Length: 165
Image 1 (cartoon, rainbow, N blue to C red):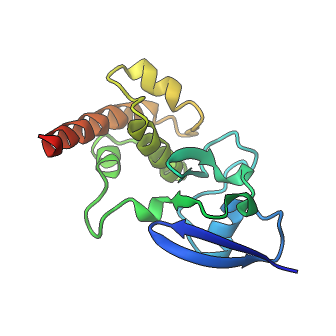
Image 2: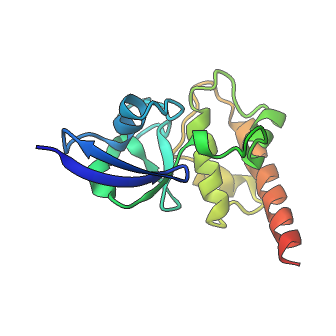
């Protein structure tokens, strides 16, 4: 028995069939759809390496059953750049050395994008650190991550206010 599922992933509508209703979104993305940018860290929702956006909200994909997302819009790290042009958050992570080994970086970037879209980034580094606290970095690149989020938030806010004028 299979379970039909329709998802929009990075702007592309996908009709899928799940053989097992217990498969997580993380495993579906990595093993079936070969979108391996989303990382499996702790597999318990504690590290944030698996963070993706579902209908615009940040989630730990390792804790989310794929079957519960029928009709959802999912954004992964593979879908944030526009061709060769990096997303402002990706560019800021590079400019501010917001990574070392890079394993947590996709989850950090997806969380930062969600945070900025939610309007929660602000200009206070402590606020950014608190709102990004679900994403762990074993290398300790937190200063660069915080600076990158603040910089990207300012850039995105500036470009959005220019577009509306």
